[in-house]
Length: 165
Ligand code: FES
Image (cartoon, rainbow, N blue to C red; front, side, top):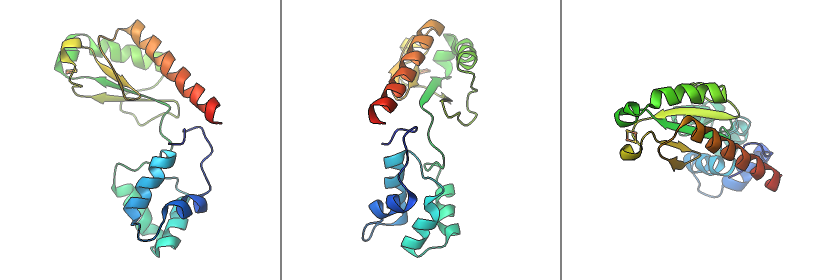
C-alpha cells in the first residue's frame, strides 16, 4: 500500500491500472484502496467514465460501504480496549493519558497524524490493559509504555516515508 504521505498516482492512471476487463466497480474500488489506502474523490469522474456510470452512482457506492474511506488513513492508529477486564485495570485513566499525549480524541474521526479508536476486547483480558498500534497487539500497557510504543510507531512511519519517497 502506498504510504499516506506518498504522492498518489493521477486519477486516470489509477483507474487505468485497476479497471481491467470485466472488473466490477466494487473490485476496482477495493484495488484502489488497497493500493493507496483510500479512494481519492478525484477518481470518481474517471471511474464513472470507465464504467459508463453516473458520478452519483459511483459516489453512492463509496459512501454506502463504510469500508471505503475518502481521505488518507492516519499514520498511527491506536485501538484501545475499553471492555470490562481492561477497564478494571485502568483503561480509562490510560485513555485520558493517550488523549493528552497525542492531542487527539477517541472515536472522533482521524487527524492526519493519529487516529484513536475504542475497541471492545482484544482477547488479552488476562494481560490488560491491552491495545493495538498499527495492527500490533500490546499488553499490560502503562502510560510510560504507551509513550514509548507511540514514539516507535511514529518513527517507523516517518522512516517508511523516507525510504519510499
Ligand atoms: S477486555 Fe480488554 S482484552 Fe479483553
